[in-house]
View (tube, rainbow, N blue to C red):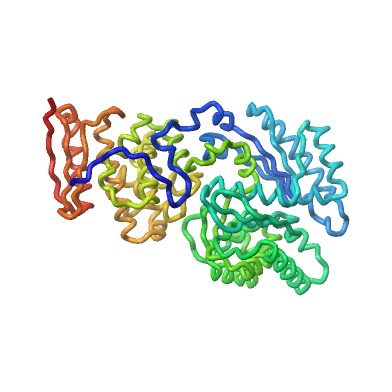
Length: 525
């Protein structure tokens, strides 16, 4: 039988482990209970920094409407004094005043504020919380280490709903571990292996090495074997990832979902040790405050990888703040695919004809009957995003599409998938990809993937020419891969849309498929 488009409710997506309900079902960002999460402000009072994040957009895959970090170093010197840094307290209080004023200006009725290791361990931590409440009206919730681990792990689940492995969140004064599997947070532990604490240790490098080894052996005994993926959360880990990118000459400077092997980590730690710190900071773009802690965090990471022996390592830009947002989501919202929800939101907000993405997907589906779940997921995302950049100047539209796809805040996308999606959208507007300023990024995918992205882009390019009503079924594609025959069928009502430009685009698609084209006009009673 020929391969034709037909509507089937998508099954669970293997890459994410969640049901793909977001493409054809009612998008949850239109639901009142989900809209309540459309703009949420959270403040994370950490040992090293105080950060305000305001989430906005599609509730399942929110955009960062506002994101500001102030390096306060509240935990500096605590190992000796037992109380918060006086200078850090002044800076943190000033930051909280600013954040309260910003929230008011954004129309946020409240901010959720949590404090972690420094405030919970300091002798004057309660006094600091009381001062913040008096001065700003903001109540700080001081959480223990296991709760910090749970929230950080939930942040990872926001971006990887079906993730499994070990989440490691390093702050200034502590380091937490949490196991995740099947969308749930399991066993979790906390430790004092924060770089601020290690920097203040007496005894030098040998004492630190022995201490780190002892603590991690204990943590490994409590957590049990964790040989799956290691998710790294926290500013110090992200700084090390930036340095790894620098060492490798990696072209895509997006930290979320950046992957490293254990061998990569070992090479980068050696690179850090032999490099001049100031020169390394300038080359990598890491702040001076953060770079000062990198050598201590590097010592922990080396032993962490050696102890747990993960199969691979992924950087997560999502952590405790995203975990606080996840905490407020109903389960039905957590079960959505964050990529598809974000693309649905982008289409509803920016496309000229919201809803046409569904029609376009159904139209080109015959080309993807044998595609696996992860690839179909990307095809759906491309259909939803195919028209959201129409406002860009025509001369730059293809590059804008590629740039948006590869660098946008989209959860659940590997870097290679970002490039595939970017190339598909680039070919939505351009037959050629050569001589682009993004050419170095193309090397993150193989030639076959580039060819598949070109086919998808040209299918989008042709399908967009028909621009039918979202309920119209007046045209379809049939794909006979063994015969290498691409058949386009249309009713008389669609025939006027099939002009010479549309025909040229159909021929271009067929050329990429190495296929022969056949067109038919259907007569309907």
